[in-house]
Image (cartoon, rainbow, N blue to C red; front, side, top):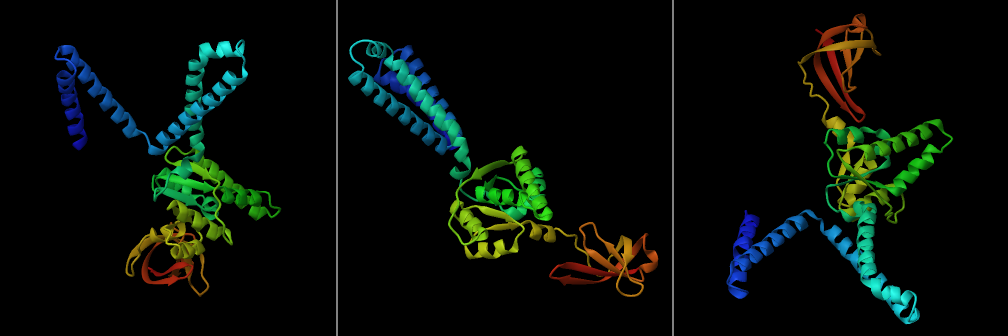
Length: 316
C-alpha cells in the first residue's frame, strides 16, 4: 500500500511542481507527468534488481571509463598530431561509450560465477559428500522439499573425483555416483546450484565444511552424524537426511493389525520375518508356516535400537 501512495503522489505532485515553477501552460503539466512516469518506471525496474547486480554494473562502468582514460592519455600524449590522433579526436566519444558498455556487460556476465558467494542466509544449503553419494537430495529438490540454493564446495567435488579414480571398486562406484548426483542437481529446474571455491582452513573436511557453512550463514545437507555434532558446536543448522527418513517412518502402535508379507524364517523356532515399506523389520511369532504368503498380524511390542526399530507381532 505505501508504494502505491508514493506512485500516486509522484504522478500528482510533479505536474503541479512544473506548472508552478517552470511555466504555467499545459506543456509544463505534460512534462511533469512524463517525469513522474519516468521515476515510477525507474523505481519498478530497480526494485526487481538485486543490490549486488547494481554494484557489479557500477564497477563495470567504472572499469570501462578508467580504461578509456588510460587509452585517451596514451593517444593524446604519444600518438602525434596525425594518424591515430586525428582518428581518435573524431571517434573518442564512440570508443568511450563502447568501453563503458563492454565493462558493464562483462562484469554482469562474469558475476554469474560468483552468484553462490553473493548470497548469504538460510536459503543456502551446502551439500556434503555423503549427501551427494546417497542421492536422495535430488528427490528432495524435485518435490520442492529443499528450497533456495544448493552450494557445492570445490573441495567436496575434488574428493569425489579422487574416489572415482580409486582402484577400489566400491569406492570408485561411490565417487562416480556422487559426481552423477552433482550433475543431476545442476540440471534441475526446481532449484539453483552454485559452486564455490572457498576453502576454509581446518584439520579435516568435516570441520572445513562446517566453517564454510558458518561463513555463509548456511545450512548443511548431510547423512553424517559427526557433522551434526560439529555443527552444534559452531551453531550451524544441519539437515540430516537420515534423521528425516527416521522421522517419516510410519507410526505403529501395539495392538494394531496390519497385512504383512512374510519373507523368511527367524532365529527362533516358528518365527517369521517380514518388512514394512520403509524397511523396518517385523518379527512374527508363529509365522514360519506363513512364509511366502501375506497374512494379517497383530503388533504386541516395539523395540527401539541404535540401528533402528524392530516390531514384534503375532499371526492374527
